[in-house]
Image (cartoon, rainbow, N blue to C red; front, top):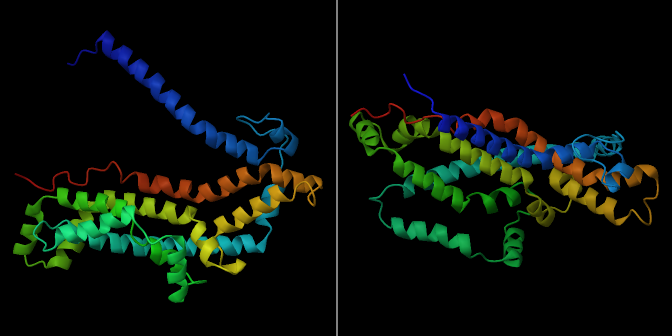
Length: 290
């Protein structure tokens, strides 16, 4: 029977207090943003809003969600995110699996090429000229292809593949599995944790991305929702003094940033709980028996 000492109980209490404080500090900005998005213009400007909405108001939500262009851009963002994430995950997995093979010829060169791109790139204007020359402007591929592989994610996945026991692949080879069979039947089923992590990283990055759409798209109906909301913020904040003197316009100008944050982070927050369970799963438990 394990005896719980007084010192251990003190440690548990202190640990609980510290963790609870960290959670509260982390949650406060999110709670405050949600409260501001439902609050009135005067209460927001006077700084009265903390945890609960004051002067409950849905004007900004109604203005944003009643616009057909908002839903068109929202659909664009979903399509861009899904397609880009699938392509990025496929390419990153293939590249990382190749680089994880220590007997691969020119392995160091391939790793060096990938790492080089982390620190050096052609710059904004050459990238714009390249995308234009390839005829990718105003297409899905202008957003997807330039960011198809994140070198940081590539190196993380490479390190994970290297940590897998080589005995598994050797046993698969003895059973007649080729390279693709080993990857699909052995490696990927054991890599759910890192795949889920990369899926979340890529999805969040593409979902929140706005500059590529702003730079490479000319037509409003092709914008991602982040560009739509960015333009709405710019219009609300720049036109308040001159043209936006109505009460509704003042309300939109006061709460548009909070509403924007809520609308953009909500889908990711809804998806995260379904992916989070893979982060802590013991994917290698019992895979190799000595």
